[in-house]
Image (tube, rainbow, N blue to C red; front, top):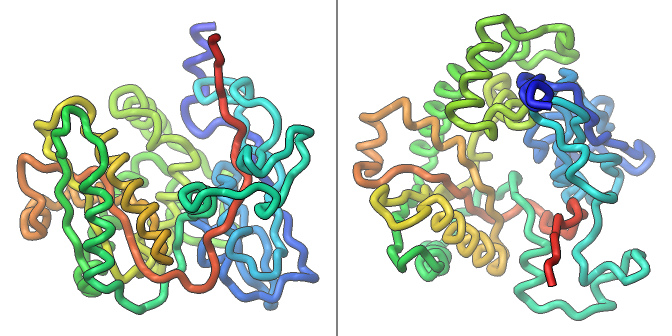
Length: 346
C-alpha cells in the first residue's frame, strides 16, 4: 500500500474529459480556441476540432469553451480520473458533475434558473467564469477602487489585514511582465517537460518522454515544494504559455492587479489573500466586468531588481494576481461541477 501511494509521480495514465463538437452547429468563431487555457482546440476550415497534442495534456473540464460558444456546439464528456499511484483520485468522487443544488430537483433532474429564485449573490457565484477574452476598453479607476474596497473588507486572521495591491494599467508594462513570467516558466518547463513538447507543433510527438534527470527533479519538487504545480494538468497549462510565442500570460487584459501579503501576518496569509481575492472577483463580476486569477505572476521571483521597481519589496510577497476587463461577449454562465464531498455528523 505504501509503495502504491508513491508510484507514478510523473505524468500518470489518466482518463480525461473528451471534447465533443457538433460541427453542424459550429460557425468557426474562434472564441473556444482563444479561451482554452491548455490550447486544446483549433479552427480548421472554419470549424473547431480537438487538438490533443500530447497524451498527458488534455481537457481540464473548466467548461469555458462551452460557456463562450454562442452556438452551443461543444459538450464536455467525462471526468478526469487517475486509477492508481500517487495521483489516484478515482475513489474520491461519486456520481457525475451536476448543476448547483438549487437548480437540481430532488429527483436529480435538472431544473431551470427560473424555477427557483436565486439571490443576487448566488447568481454571481454560480455564473462567474474565468474570463480570457477581453475588450481593449480600459476599466475606469472608480470601478477598480470599488473592487479593491471589496477586497479590503474581507475577513482575515486576527483582523491583521495583510494585503497590499499593485494596480497596473500600462499596456507596455503588462507586456514586459508577461515576457519575464514566460521566460521564468521556460526554465521550469526545461526541467519538467519533454523538450519536443516545448514548441507548439500540431500534431505533437506523443511518444516523447521525460529524461531520467527530469523525473528525479520532478519527484524532488513534488516532495519538497508541493504537488500542485507538478500535476500534469498544471504542467499542461504552463506549457501552453511557453510553447506558443503568441500566448499572453495575462490574456491582454487592460488591468492587472497584483495581490501581495505581509509575510509577518497572523495565521495563514495565503488563506486571507484567497478570501480577499474572491471578494474582489465577485464584486467585479457583479459590475459586469470579467476576471481571471493568474498565479504565474510568481515568475517574477526570478527578477528581483524588476520586482523592486514595481514596488514588490519586503515584508511583502506576491500571492497571486487578477486580470480585469470588459468581456468580449457573454461568457459568464452556469456550468456543472463535481459533486460536493460532504461527511455529515449529526
